[in-house]
Amino acid sequence: MKRILLTVEYDGTAYAGWQRQINGLAVQQVLEEALASACGHPVTVTGASRTDAGVHALDQKAHFDTGSSIPPDKYAFVLNTMLPPDIRIRESRQVPSAFHARFLTSGKTYTYRIWNARHASALKRNTHWHVPVPLEENLVRAALDTLPGRHDFAAFQAAGGTAKTTVRTIHSVRLETHGEEWVLTVSGDAFLYNMVRIIAGTAVEIGQKRFGPDAFVNAFETLDRLALGMTAPAHGLELTEVRYPEQAFTDPASLLSRLRIIPDSPSPDLRVSS
Figure 1 (cartoon, rainbow, N blue to C red):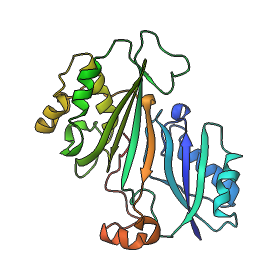
Figure 2: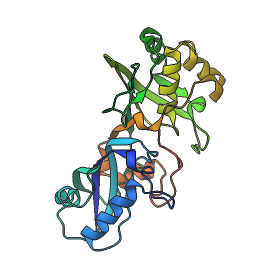
Figure 3: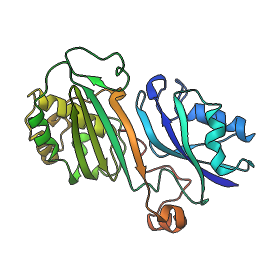
Figure 4: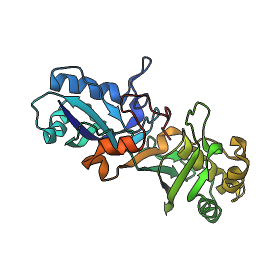
């Protein structure tokens, strides 16, 4: 058996999220069905992040095991002839049998896009949150500057999150404005359920002067979800990058042992989409 790692890009508009479920079509289901046909046997795919319905991905990572004779680097070519046009495999490669796409991540980057104009955009309707009220950019930037660092993000988690700890490290937060388009990029070691969407929603309300630029600081102190603003719509969010330490590819078994993770056990963070 070989373990294959896929880099998956998808437009999440038509899907009920990444994870297979009984009441909606998920990206995982479509991918597993294509793989089963290509490999000639049932395939289970394990993804790095369980993105929600409507969320997009540029760099979702997912692994699976197979005894198929297809060369590892050819899965991208094979699958892209079978998958719908809103799901594409950007790369496929063989990894050690102990590699785990979800447990061994060292960090992720998410991008949230906003269309800040009086009228909505026809072309950006599935990838940008339309905010028709002008935003005060200086207030938003001042607030975002308080996010980097290691904090308890308990207030930044939506109901349904099951993480055992809410302490996370945000490495960087970047806001770019291109006319009416606002692009918010957040990088960190890990994220709580809906964390990036809560950051984006609060940033917009800060820009509308509904919250002060100290809103994030207050949330760190109170750990109260009510100290922050709304959860931004899912369709503005993109999983932009999933990162792994080099040891994940050279000696994943030792890394898993050091992290005290049993690969076949449920993840300690069952809801990791942002």
